[in-house]
Length: 151
Image (tube, rainbow, N blue to C red; front, side, top):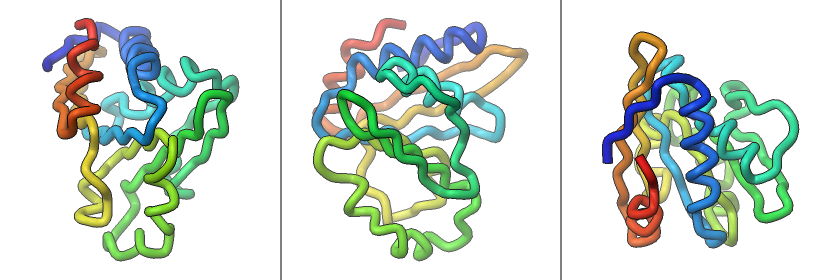
């Protein structure tokens, strides 16, 4: 599915919509795109829709931020600075990608085969203050969400 987002508020709105559609069971989103494309903005819209009131920043240096929200736990990863995917062995990834968690992974290509299959892959490209988004489903749960996304 291809979606045109005219501005930052449209990107936040897509995040909100995804938050409302994601199942409460374990669900994984991969966010791909160059620096400044809007990956963290999309994550911010999603987290705010789930009830997070504070700042949402890309966890570039911490690799992962945990958000304990009323409805579920969300783990927001930024793998941009990962040099060798084997570094992820030390994070205990199995603990994150289990139970009822929602995992958002920026720069998933840096994680290679250490990451599970994403339910949805969201590719964001930025041009002239607008964004083009391509969303693909890779699991039945992802297909269910994608069928409900309004573009």
